[in-house]
Length: 189
Ligand SMILES: CC(C)(COP(=O)(O)OP(=O)(O)OC[C@H]1O[C@@H](n2cnc3c(N)ncnc32)[C@H](O)[C@@H]1OP(=O)(O)O)[C@@H](O)C(=O)NCCC(=O)NCCS
Image (cartoon, rainbow, N blue to C red; front, side, top):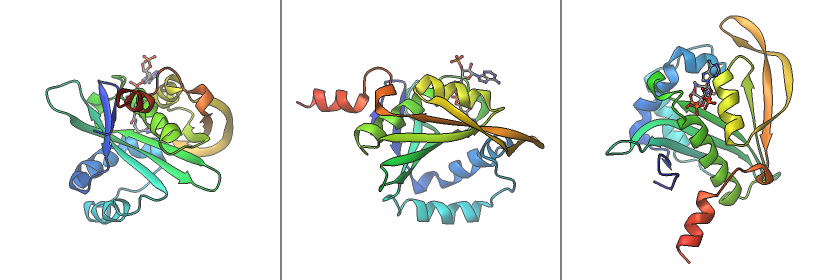
């Protein structure tokens, strides 16, 4: 586990979990949330994971672990797509199974990914867009420190209906509470 708040952890994006990633991403609720309109085959996903695990220069990818049980359980992924020239990144997340959503894992994993992005990757600004009807997403991102900066009109679909996308961003000054990265550095002094 690279970074944790005691309940939720971030670990490596792992080719051995390719089939889990594919199962999570195939859930229609996840595909609607991501605006992906066709299913992906397992073969295609395994091939893409093989590329993604070898291309980390511009993407910080993490597996989210639920640490509430006896052993860490992989439950989702987060990604920062980095623009090194501007020191910015776009944020993506999914929590794989419906029973793991609404338990605070998404907001905690978002917060840990911002912590990594600001204090390991040295980003200045992290941004995202989320379909306006995705209330759980907007709330989870706000809890982690993102704020709404506007809406892009009629630029997405939610269950067959055109909808707006909410644009959000966060800078280090907005980061709420104690940084787990800074705490690790402090503990090793
Ligand atoms: C979006 C997502 C990452 C959020 O993670 P999560 O673990 O479910 O979120 P959390 O439990 O941390 O917080 C969600 C918040 O939204 C609230 N919420 C959840 N569903 C809601 C709904 N339908 N209406 C209103 N509020 C809702 C929760 O009560 C919680 O707020 P609270 O802590 O004040 O009670 C997760 O639901 C997910 O992976 N969804 C599918 C993929 C997706 O949409 N990804 C994002 C694409 S931009």
